[in-house]
Amino acid sequence: MEFAFETVYNQKTLTAMAKAVRKTTRAKHSKRSHIIGIVVIVLGLLLVAGDILNSDFEFKTFITLLAVVALLVVLPFEDSLNAFIAGRRMIKGSEKANVVFSDENFVSATDVGTTEFPYSIIQSVADTDDYIIFVLNQNHAQAYDVTSLVNGTKEQFIDFIEQKTGKKVQKI
Image: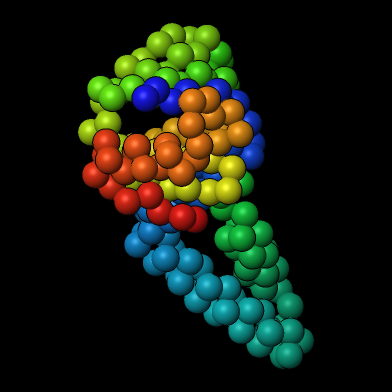
């Protein structure tokens, strides 16, 4: 059985891909980064609070407060920020992909060209409500919009991919 998808790589798609990479191949590194970020935020707030209580609000206090605010903004929105940067780096013509999955491999066609991939390059597979995401490495992923699935259901495709890759699909 062949499955086919048409995916538009917009901000929503790229954000889902960034989240999938963060929760699969980068999970350990991401957890460490979040712990360090939270520790830095707490320490920064303690330093700022100490300076404010001592009426010692100097330029260094402002810089510390600025760093804390930057971390408070970046940590919750890291997937969206990574998606924005990825979108800016995308090759023109690769914003829309048509992919066909067969028993031997899967073929992706964009305005730039057509590429044939073996299933062996897939490191992990993630399932969100809207996408099935293949994580190829720590910096690359591919997303497939489940609303555009042709020739089967999402569950059938997941079973097919688990069989072809030998990897369990992770729900994120």
